[in-house]
Image (cartoon, rainbow, N blue to C red; front, side, top):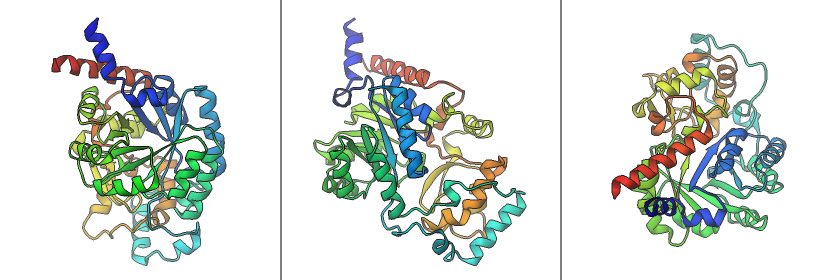
Length: 366
């Protein structure tokens, strides 16, 4: 009994009491259902609203609240530093090099990608300060408990989120980012290592987390990057983190309802089947390797453009690929923890597995 209580207390960190959650497991997802399920299973769900129009953000956060009651959840937005002020598609499109447009046309013809029947985020929105501000306003109208963002979000926005009663969190990939987070008054940090899916930096998780913990002082730190097993939860706590932040593992849940084509690619992928590529957004992002990334890595292919121009370049093509499920070119952001994502599960079962594996790891340590 004493052993069980010790395991329970070890896995219940200070951040659990601070935020009112059972387990120090934070889950990022673009799915409202997954976000709510993580929260309802005792973790902390964080909805990725980066690809949503402001009006949709208001509606979707209200829907998540209806599913979780008074349990806490968060919302994540992304705006890297150095982007333009205006959401002007025509202006951005006019700056695309002819050689890059010819390459996109070549891909469309080679893989016989049909035209999309409508617009998507990728084919209609330029990442810009103007669009981000509209998204922030939508988030602040909600009663979400946490506002998460990339490093570089202004102190003014952070203070507005705090005034709205939200805990503020920033994802960082290098110790040099600590000073920006402290200057902005961030409440929590996610140390996201190179192993992570999506946009990621150059330092591995095991090397990054202790450095961020040491530099963060009193700011709580979560570990992220390739984490999909309970043993990694225990290792993260041992390195001084107060919890873990996971993304890839939720893709294979019933609640996410990912397409079967992408599910099969995830099930077959090992850690070495992910690749760092700028082909998605113009910034380094870890994706499952497919014909898409291979084409952009091939000899003679142009270098991907900087954000936000890469999205403007590929927006219509990517929308057509996903809408019409052009299998060779379909891809998904995924971390190196994808190796543990090999069958359909539920959010509850994933969290139960993580906790049971963590308890097993603690027993092995003793």
